[in-house]
Length: 184
Image (cartoon, rainbow, N blue to C red):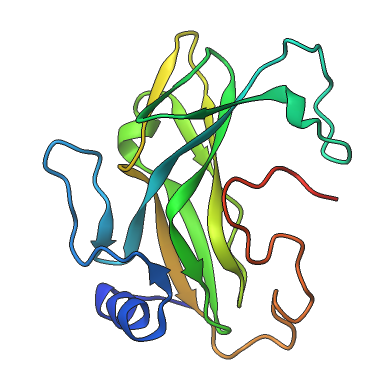
């Protein structure tokens, strides 16, 4: 697999709508950076947040997840309680080519504050808004800034297309819009 450079990312975004909206430069004056970088794309977090709460004393169960475990907020800033997490989504909508696997890593600005961003790989031919999970590993409240950089996506091109893509198997998170909670 080869990590794809900015020229490929730019071409795929502009000619094939791989990333919409696409920012064709690294924006960083007074904000957490976002846009195309040398070997990746720094996506922004939207203004939509689902903040985890345990007011109902629920058990976290990936097979039977209760939406009541979240408080929904739409804001320019999200405050994540200590030792808790929030779900959000990217501003950008991604369309992954059939011969590409996308890996997401958190931004160092957040990591240096004890805020971890987790996203599973974007499989070949997956598309949608990416659901982001922000974990606040600190004993203090933590801020996430909407419309600013949240995570970096790296595009790994395979030696050839897979026999079966995410679209071929009708993956359960295909075409998601907004924040998507666990599904079984």
